[in-house]
Image 1 (cartoon, rainbow, N blue to C red):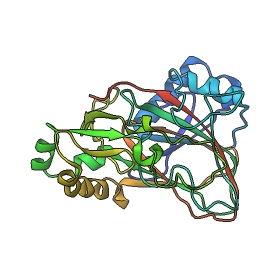
Image 2 (spheres, rainbow, N blue to C red; image 1 turned 30 degrees about the vertical axis):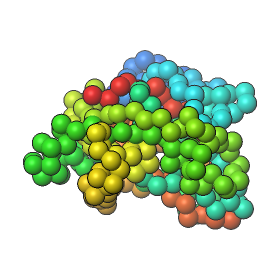
Image 3 (tube, helix red, strand yellow; image 1 turned 90 degrees about the vertical axis):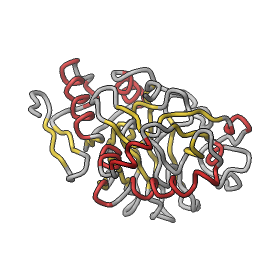
Image 4 (cartoon, rainbow, N blue to C red; image 1 turned 120 degrees about the vertical axis):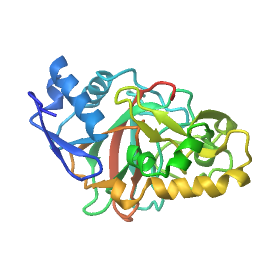
Length: 281
């Protein structure tokens, strides 16, 4: 694709591109925002380097792509509830966002995408990986595609934010609520069709998917575990090394991501806004 206002350079064969020639603090006009959106749809995740955004500018940029979500279980910043400060202190061992997942799929309208901005990064480690779920679907056998195309799966926040959530007993720098409300379930198609690209992608993951609709968790587990492993095969992924001022903007409808927790003893502070999406179909 040809771009007039920005430069877009792919970083891997599977997905991901770096966007340059733009200062996001300068309120890009509609033509630039349109090209950024095209780059996102074409590459699934896009990255910007050397940005300097205030919280207000970060929020303003996110709003150019839709209404911003307020997280159900993680408190935003006091003056800017739209921003989650993703923080890990040097004395903490668990991170936020570790493990392959798609954001807030337990909602009826999961996120379109998230814009994550690096405020403070460790000297080494703390990369984020992304996996292309178009490729995850397209490389399945025709028989499995046919079967999954008729199935729906249940999603719930209970594993992350329920009363017995893994990690709930650990003190964190972030204010996370663990409640009964997280045990609710919502159903989504196992294979969703992206409303902008028209392509089909796999839409189950280990973070919030619990079972197939009308099946027990035990019955669902063998096939789900196969799909979880298949969805993040190395050839479907890219890996992003953060620098202070870097931004990652991923399309949550067709991408899984994983914040790698390999920087113990160091601080990492990121700001995230999340854009409202649509009901998966």
